[in-house]
Length: 63
Image (cartoon, rainbow, N blue to C red; front, side, top):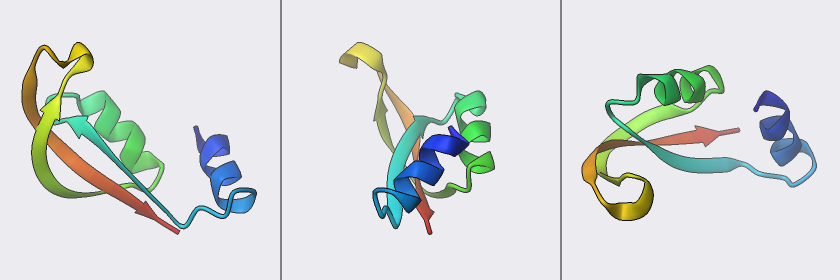
């Protein structure tokens, strides 16, 4: 994933990336934080298939 982020910055010119994860998914949170994403706010989060909405965290990466 670090290589994907590097490619997005250097080749595609990405300066910002926004994503979200389910608050209970600490593994996803850990990966995003290691990549440099910073939590911003709580949001409703629709789990795969849209069959469940739970608490989520919006996070952002800035170059």
